[in-house]
Image (cartoon, rainbow, N blue to C red):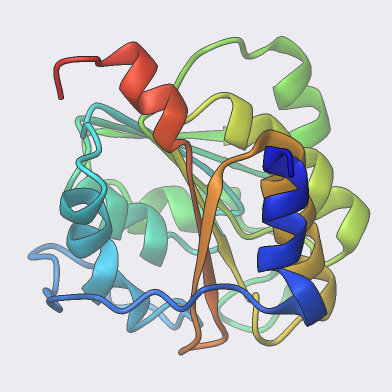
Length: 208
């Protein structure tokens, strides 16, 4: 039985091994904004420590109003946030909220924001990241395309809404099958899929 068959058997009937954090720790510096991501910041350090991940760089597709972006900035030297910033503002108005988010995150000097569609970004970016976060439109095709790129360019990729959106969950599973990476699911707070390139990490850092 090859590796792909083993992975497919693992994910039979859409099951993903459950991620159980050993500790919960709130990052020190967080903005006071509304976010569906609140609560997930408590497991970031557990993920980083548990999989022995480097804390150099993080890329995030889907910044929103910056809560998760700020949370990641507590742990990484540099955080890159990519978003179209086209949604309702915190005041309820539809339109571009780039400047609003930029102002919220102005105190976080290690964050860089870019107003871009993920499709345009992944065409030009050949960088490698320690960590990636996907929280874009909750549709299969977009999640798969963006997530596959992230999985191939980072040591660990996390996907929000694996419990609330079946399309996101399935895309995450299919990326794990395609890449051979290890997948776990934190089933709380709408779900967080955690995809780890264990083989690649070992190959790049044989003395870890």
